[in-house]
Image 1 (cartoon, helix red, strand yellow):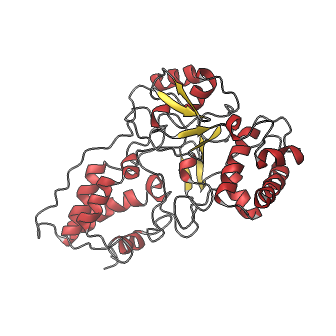
Image 2 (cartoon, one colour):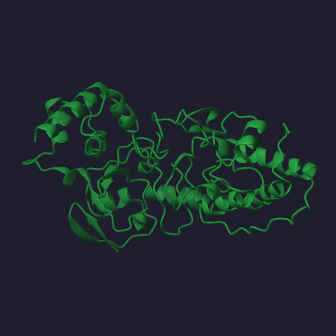
Image 3 (cartoon, chains in turn green, blue):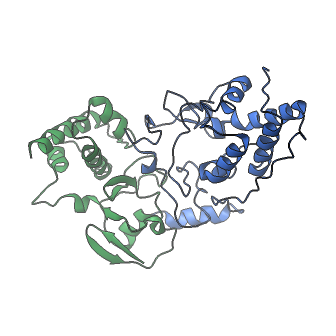
Length: 153
Length: 207
């Protein structure tokens, strides 16, 4: 079957019910999305499907239905970071970093839907992304900083 | 990656729990053939279903918060992750239900076998309308809501049965998988009870 990831068509030969996360990491070598729990309890595997945040461990590849997959590798590049990635670096959000690609993808999706979220909105949307290091205050600060950046562009 | 392990777990669970549409028949009893007493008996079984956590957990009211409960969760508690379904009842205003409860378009058998994973069906996941607030409600309260056209979507008993037939989240309630306790009786038996209750005139215990 053919799927579209980060703007490229990729041909894969896998079981229909293989979770997208396994396809990305094991079949396509795209290692940004992380395996945390495998049951949509942690958010480390978050990617975008047609711009919407989705836990890739929970989506069977056959259920993609032609949706465009964006991983953190496709969100920005080192030369042209997404505003959320810029803010993440400026706020030095990451500690161990394992959950951060999922956090960033969720935050980018949040800001796409709501360019100026309140603290309550940030907490409501980001609560499905767990961080064992407890970087939540910096995550919230970076989301607000990224919102400002996006509004200035 | 743990995919082979998960496959082994799934295969080891024996009977596959299907998330597919269950075929049911909508055949109401003849008009006048169900007494009020029998209608109330049917209603008591309907209430066992509507009051069961498998159904009531997603029939929460203005709190917008679905509930979790079951053998592995201990006491009933609000859905983790600060989930708020919002006015849309699909989380559009905050975190969409479909972020985790992905839509299963293809017909594969093991969609909901993994314990604690977010259940999924071939339609968008959502809470019931706020008017259908069943969580913690009495048999009298739920009965009054279900027969009130202003609060049941303008549905007759046959319409309610058709709704049960068409809403695949409701089908899931009888085959939830992942070690979850299904709703009581079967979907067909529940539909039959709704139809009998309707033919009896939708009697409620408080009448």
